[in-house]
Length: 305
Image (cartoon, rainbow, N blue to C red; front, side, top):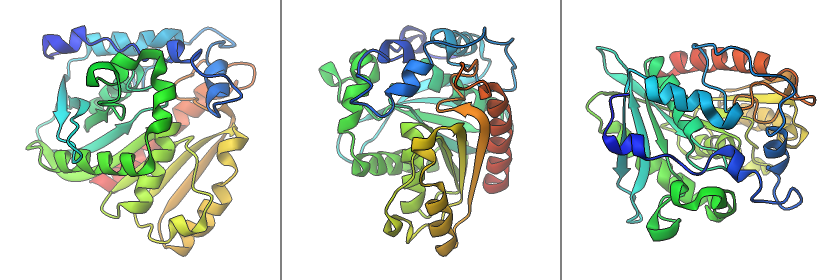
């Protein structure tokens, strides 16, 4: 990838496997999905270059994609309205026209190589992808995910909804000013990031599209009152904790006259896009990945033209 030397040297310590042992299952509602991902039921299939890289095998496919990508990726310190720069990975597509921007929101594991690989895949599809580190300034020496390593899953509990909304607005402001950007901005998030994106869509009416991968929805009907941005929800059927509020979200989004398209994939578990090989409790993860990614691209095209 045509990047600064800094990018090649910046190997994130906050990878999924190192984070899995940081938090006991009883204390962390995401811990079950982390443990599931440690034991795939079958070897990973041959890589489909039209899908995001899998996070299986310590994100080896994502690391390889980043190394070999022809797209331009770079690190940027986005100005934070609270005075703390937001460390972000930005990937540009190879295209003549100005491009829509997709903000890629990380999981509880921090800004990992896998998230950067997803950003590169979105750039391959023609989008400027920006993956901000929501742990910027919270690590040792005012670092972020890299410096926190396996402690990222602990520190992310201290990131409040007000923090995420502020940072997303800061990233959106940065995106709107990019000379290569078209002015259309969407957001996609995974797990913690999926919930973060859903909540942001309820509070930022200027967002063109929001895509929530297996992210929890608000349980308070009042949270939906001012919803305007269209939301695509992508869920594994074997994920009762997250799926519990889908019907409530459908009802309240309809009341607000905001588009909400939930899709539940049979045989898939939480975190299916990263754990594509699946396991005995989630044998349908690869099929869910294939179907969900097509829906993702269709939704982005529809709302960011």
